[in-house]
Image 1 (tube, rainbow, N blue to C red):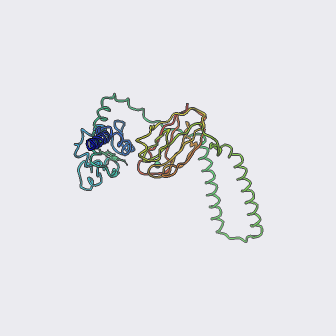
Image 2: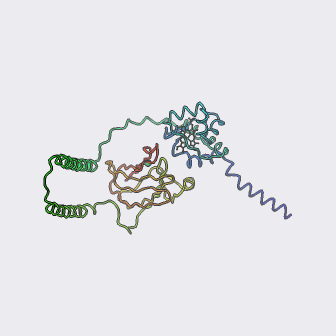
Image 3: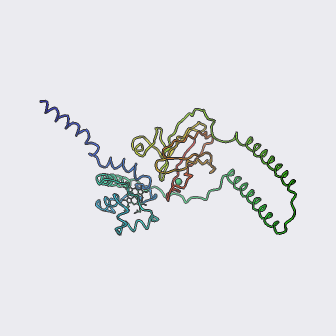
Length: 321
Ligand SMILES: [Cu+2]
């Protein structure tokens, strides 16, 4: 009797452990979100790597499993398809992600289901070609100011360089007092500029309590938003995440920003394409960025730190209403 009970418990434990493997397609979905979604979509176009809709028809399961387990080896072994893909996708080798072959099979099952679903969905209308965007007014003011100051500096250097052709006696004492006067004037100018501009910075004072907390995880090559903490790639499969964020206008938001692979930048650009606030997204750290976005409109989050070949793809939409 006792032994039967032990066996029963064992069988029950096995049964409980089983469901994780019972549905490979569901496992594949989680794996895909964690390890592939940064570079691939299913039916939403190419990212760093090819769109994987229909890949289960293009390739055999055997090829898929071999490729996904060790892309570098396939290219090294001059597999015809792998080499062609490598050339086509800017000679970026897909990283070797140390997947087991059951995991690769689960991914295959997921992609077969997801690809079929993507194909049965109606094709979206092609997007209008992007219009060249005008620089925000503040941004172009900054640029003009920077260029003018640079031009002045270059002219001063050129003038000094030319003046050394005909050397003259210098009154050292007068030169030193001129230097002191210039130093005092420059210090006063800096203090005055700081006094005028500092109150205008968009960062909230330390100690202010945010009305809304948004967790941001940055990784190659996307930003993921969540209401719950995300500190590792494994969290992405556990908590509800979004790739687009809606915020009510005027709320004080605290972004808690981290990086999941390398250091990225988290830069918020306003409706007129001006950089409004930014912080770094660093692995192992959570940076807090308190901002109030009073103006409604379409904002963009861009990566401000060159993080690898797909850096330019790191964009997220933020809508303030
Ligand atoms: Cu980047």
